[in-house]
Image (cartoon, rainbow, N blue to C red; front, side):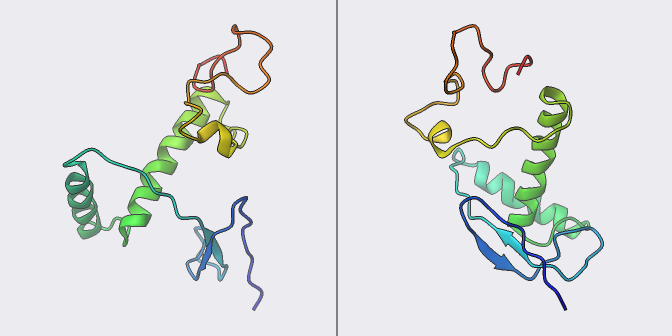
Length: 120
């Protein structure tokens, strides 16, 4: 049986989970992402996950968070980019040394919109 592999820019690890709604036998490549949450929010996230899981939601905390994040990404793409994926952000654009408010690299003027601006 052929296995399809999704490519990623920064690598990742393989899982045996199907990567489509049909449940076809494909290999999914995932990336580890880490982020901080405010004190107490971690408990709320875990509690919401458990309640969701008991009612047919995602089986793992990672799947739960992934679904929430991707739902928001799709909403933002629809709102700011005609439903299309945004251009891939570089590591430099995302680093702590270069805040998200920074203008796009190579912007000729300050009049150019920020990535999150509706005009983008």
